[in-house]
Length: 55
Image (cartoon, rainbow, N blue to C red; front, side, top):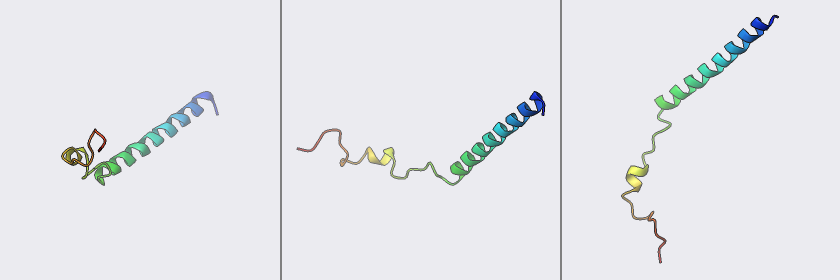
């Protein structure tokens, strides 16, 4: 193997790993992994989590 052949192999490995990561990210978005139904929008209206400690 010459230097160019090894370099091309490394680039294809990185491209494959990047493609795999992108596919995994798209899967997480499509399966609503980032949804938080009890998120900040609801928690901000709740008085249970106040900035001040209770006496």
